[in-house]
Image 1 (tube, rainbow, N blue to C red):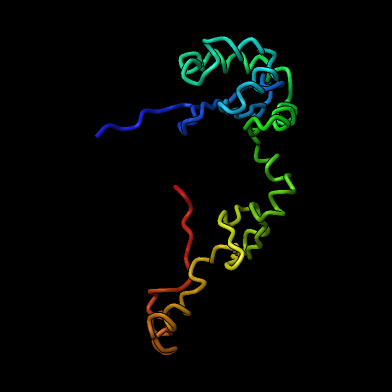
Image 2: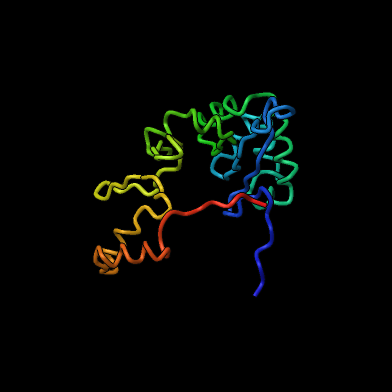
Amino acid sequence: GDTVPRAGNASGGGQPGWILKCKGWETDPNAYIYFIAQAPVWKSICRVIGKEEWITDPDYATPVARLPRLMSIFATIEEWTKTLTKFEVMDILNKYDIPCGPILSMKEIAEDKSLYETGTLVEVEHPTRGSYLTVGNPIKLSDSPTEVTRSPLLGEHTDEILRDVLGFGEREIVEIRDSGAIGAVERLAAE
């Protein structure tokens, strides 16, 4: 069969979307916003970017008419977004229900308190690594709460698995350990 072609920044979901530069893009690799030009908010988009004539222009009035002009449309929208920070753009667009989202750095993500409140980000304690930030469970069900826990240490549960899962007795586990089949792991330096 045919493979799906690469789409670059295009949303591919039936709604035209693109990553646009915002104020500061020249020096900040995260000064971008993802912008979706949905048909139901087209008039609002035109008003916000100062292109009200597009509302009635036959070349722009319908999604079908806009399709061959999308790159030009996004270039025009980008001229507007480049005058504002990504958060200023978002504040303005949100007032008109125009879908958008800022491109965030890891630092911005880690400092977003709402991500901790929703469990999207969680801190986990690890005996050798210490406290670290990781992604929480994205699926949240009221009757099935989950907890994100640390990864196990190498060999941490070996005895438990041998005993409880595989049915080995303590004497057999000692024999296996004494044979060298399990035990301390030596780390070799990379050559």
